[in-house]
Length: 294
Image 1 (cartoon, rainbow, N blue to C red):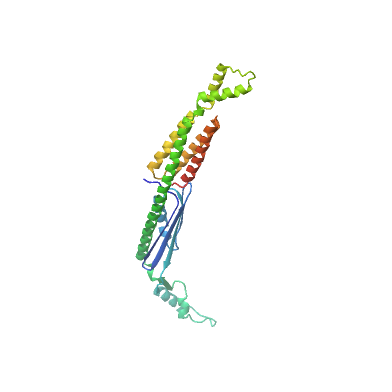
Image 2: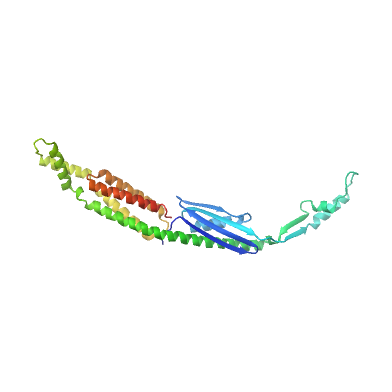
């Protein structure tokens, strides 16, 4: 599987039996899956199926799906309800009329609701079902294009993330090999500091060694380095695996940031602090790119 971003756009159009329609799909970043579907009047019946297809194709992101439909002009079909007209005529024929009332006219009877029905000829249920099926097929076409665009952008993001990850691995190894974190280096710096405060320049070597060991233990970043290496490896595995891994990548980026912050806090040398700061910058840039991953 490949990585996919959460941003994309697609459009698909179609026409059948007097109808023309256009699907427009747009997706942007989101913490979860948010489907915002809007269909044209008269096509509410396909909304549930359309929403289900969107949910099957997408895992994460806000997706705006809009269906616009235009209908060609059609000659209407006029039907007169003969039975109702006959009943009305018979009822009025036997009704007593006062001098102020005029006999019912034909146009008056036809104006009564239900006597005359005007329908569009294309309202045939079979034809409408055919149109709805073709509209859903166009949605599938638009969805395929949207997914392809998201995957194409995901391939680019994967390359960028791989470069960031290589940089993180290099910095992790540099921190691990940094001479400043060795007990001997700590002892030398502590000796120089104490010599400045010693009036006669004499320093108790035994006490100096004990203090150096204590400072080395407090400043030990072995666990942070090991966790950095483990998290970097986990990110690499997810990039290789692909699929909807954005949430897991985001969590690992947070953990990487936490370990880099601890490393900086424990640092006892400017060179090691510089490496830690570079780690934090790279991790932040890594996380910004991860925010786009599905």
